[in-house]
Length: 106
Image (cartoon, rainbow, N blue to C red; front, top):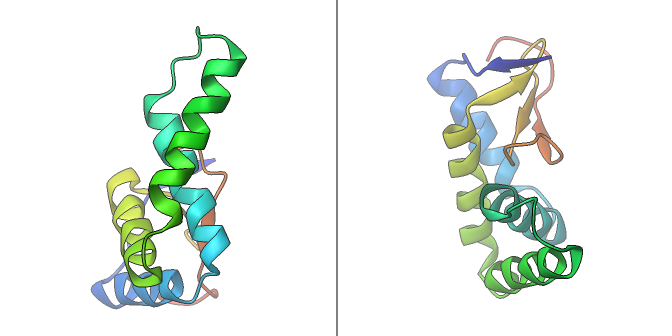
């Protein structure tokens, strides 16, 4: 079950730090998937959807690491979704890519 994010300012800082600790490939996949989820049209042929995802992947592939992490953090804030319990935060709008914080007050 998905919830709206409700954390303290310190929690947002922890999320920011967690994004900057993520592996480059994880960030690229998350950003490309979110772009595809936002713009893909389900009615088009599979070949179009595959090429659309490849285009999105190329758009973020060559970005610097800190820019990727900042973009992932921005998507968390934009999508404003976490799991039931509030310790796993969605980067992409479908929740396939997440950032986890350890249990505790956030």
